[in-house]
Amino acid sequence: MAWLTFLVGMVALWGAAEGAAVGGLLTEYAAGVAGGAALLAALAFVPAVRRMTPAGRRLLLTAVACPVPLVLAVVTWVSVG
Image: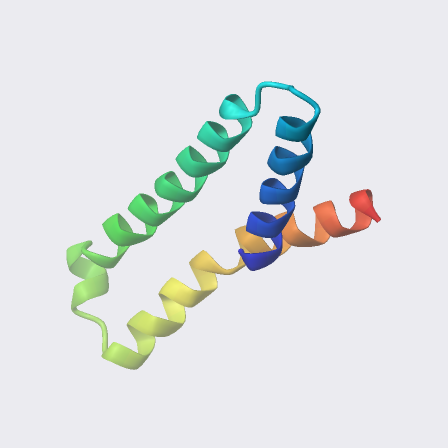
């Protein structure tokens, strides 16, 4: 997430310096992060997940949370340079 946030921030900064409207980019990024956090929180409170052991619950939530930002970070890293 740090790489993606840095990348979006730099693109927004460069766009704002050139006079481009960057509100849409920042809004979409914030909505994506908030949506992902809401989905992860909703999954954490599903009764079947709450009945799991704490270690199992952490493992499940980590397995669900990490692939999406990891894939996005790798794709942007490769495509940006």
